[in-house]
Image (cartoon, rainbow, N blue to C red; front, side, top):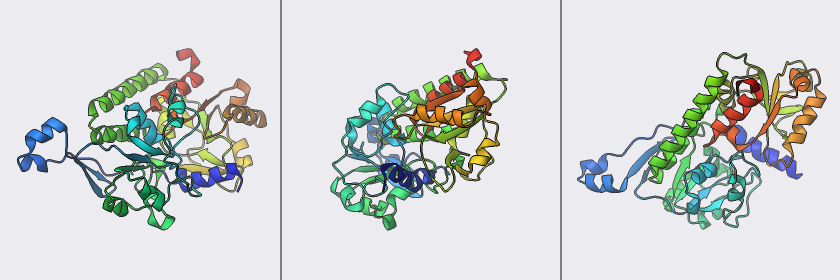
Length: 346
C-alpha cells in the first residue's frame, strides 16, 4: 500500500472517528469522608475522573505514559505544553510541523517504545502491554477497541494502567467539538498530574489571546473559508478531506470567518466532487498539513486550479497544522487565520 494511501487509511480509521464530550470530571471526596482530608490537601490526590463512562481514580501522578496515534497530536502536545514530556515512555503522535516553535522537534525526540505499529499506525495489544504503562492516552475510544487488536480499557486496568479518552472521543462524533474541548483536555491532564496551576494559566492565556483577536475583527464581514487537509484522500471524490463541522468552525468564527462548506455534510468531513467545489465561492483557504512536507505547494496548486475563487484572485490562504486540532494551541490558529482574513485589523 502506498505510503500516502496508508496515511489516509490511518486518518479514516482515527481522525474521522475523533469526536460528545467525555463525561465531566469530578473531584473525589471519599478521602475526606474517611479521615484522609489532610493527605488529600497535601498531595492533591486522590483524583477521580469519569471518563466516557469509566471511573479512573488516580492516587499519584503517572510516570509511564503511552500516547497512541489517533491521527492527532492533541495529547502529546498537551503533555509537552504542561512540562510533562519526561513522563512519556512511548509516543506515536507526530505531524512533522507545528505553529509552536520547537514543538515538532521536541515530539521527534520523544521515545517511541520501539513498537511495531499496525496498519492504522498505532500500538497493538501485546506491544502495548509490553510497554508496562501506568497511563494510556487515546484520542478516541477506537484506540481501546479489542475487536481491532488494541488492548481494552479492562485489560489495561488489569495490567495496572489507567486509561483516558480525550474530549469528543467517547462516541466518535467530532462534529460537536469546540475550543472548550481543548481546554477540557488541558484541565484534565492538569488534574491527573497535579499541575492544575499550569493548566489554568495555559487556558487563561489562550482565552485572553483569542478574546483580543476576536475583538479586533468584531463587526467585520465574515469571508467564506475552505478548510481541508493537504494531499489527503478520505473518500471517493476528488475532495474528500474538506472540513464541514467541528472545532475548525469554532476557530473560524473566532477569527472572523465562516466555513464555506458547513452545510455540505452532517459529519465533520465532506466528500465533494470537483464540480461542487468549483461552484462554491471561496474567499480564503486554510490548508492543514498532516505529515505533508510541502502543504504550501498544495495550497498554491488549489488556487491555480480554481482561478474563479475570490481566494485565488486575492491570494488568500494560510497553511497550519496542530493549532487547528484539539490541543493547547487553538489561539494560534485563530490569530493566523484572522490576520489572513482581516489584515487591516492588525
